[in-house]
Length: 206
Image 1 (cartoon, one colour):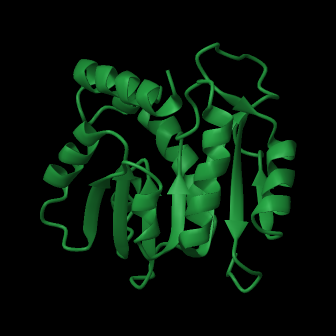
Image 2 (spheres, rainbow, N blue to C red; image 1 turned 120 degrees about the vertical axis):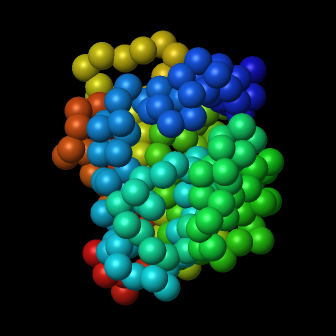
């Protein structure tokens, strides 16, 4: 089973079991760890307090609005059940929109400053590595300023067979070679995890 269909099945089962407002519905252990990882993603730039920013959240969640982000929010997910729940939850938010991402072509029609991806590449499948590279490349191309994504590290002390792990240094080198020379790698916040920031140029306010 490819990564897309595997993820849809896993998250549908988790949603049915745990309900839409639970971190377990998106396969996170706790809300604290889920939000902490997203906080690190947001360190790509000063996202809060700038109403002019447009953020594409690929694999959408509620962290940005919960933390007070007031710009334009675009949430994308491969799972139509999650999108339906998000549309209900934020029905009164005129600056939030959501769509089911059938393919990366869906993102090509969008205009956004930053794209954030949290936990999108955690599920092990035969094509997870290729999917990561293809997805990050495409989303960076459409971003005006940059992309931030996280993943699990091959340096983790304990590994699970159903999760995907990546060498942070090899992946960072690939990003610098194939996507942009402006790359920052972070693995200073939680063992076995890392985050990559990709920038369009050095004019970005870190």
